[in-house]
Length: 247
Ligand code: NDP
Image 1 (cartoon, helix red, strand yellow):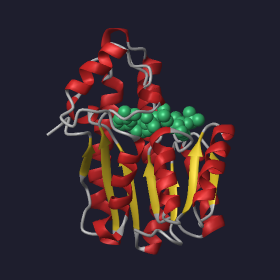
Image 2 (cartoon, protein in one colour; image 1 turned 135 degrees about the vertical axis):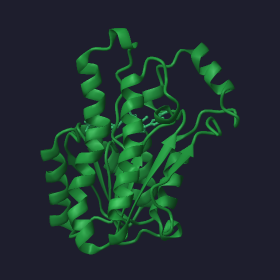
Image 3 (tube, rainbow, N blue to C red; image 1 turned 45 degrees about the vertical axis):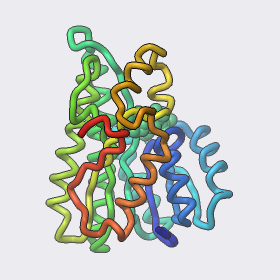
Image 4 (cartoon, protein in one colour; image 1 turned 120 degrees about the vertical axis):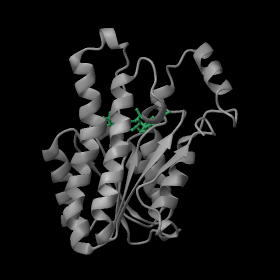
């Protein structure tokens, strides 16, 4: 699955799943653009990934929830590389609370980052991809968007929204040979899930048929497959990477 000379943007790539996705594309010799809000962590991630590959690894700072930031990132990637082949909308946050106590800011922050952020970046790459008449967009959703989760109404709504966005964009862009798919991880070991109490973690593992939490690399492998020509006839789908949690 060589991605030599391909230009890949991964949002939220300073750590966790996004960083693993960026590293996996880098290992297949793509040019990879890592994005996030914190320059120091992005720089560290780029320095960790660059030795793995022959492509160019760069970062761009920006907040995906701001349309202007998403546009500026894509514009600067166009100026540097002249094209975008793959966009991975991975940036995401949680602000958990029970419905009764959920603050408007908690709802807005999660919807603005996860759903609107994906829309902003998708919209920004659409024009150059349409001109080129090719491209791949992968949205990182979640099993929570398919099954709901108590205490995560904002997060579940954002991730369910990303599935609707994926299918609509897939229909709209298919005639230009732009494929749009979603990957729905189950519980993956990252900073996002690190604060789970031991008891809750044990209960969770019991609900996973394969019997363990996933690793960021498990998600990255699915993203690479869907981005590759091997998946050329796949669009508008949600691929679960969840150890069989949902079936
Ligand atoms: P992490 O919290 O480890 O990493 C999130 C990344 O997103 C960081 O690089 C962060 O960088 C970036 N980010 C957050 N907000 C913004 C923003 N507004 N603009 C740009 N970048 C931003 O999360 P994970 O790696 O665990 O999760 C990655 C994705 O996978 C998320 O969409 C998450 O919802 C999804 N997912 C994760 C699961 C899990 O079990 N871990 C399960 C299912 C889905 P910075 O803060 O510096 O901006």
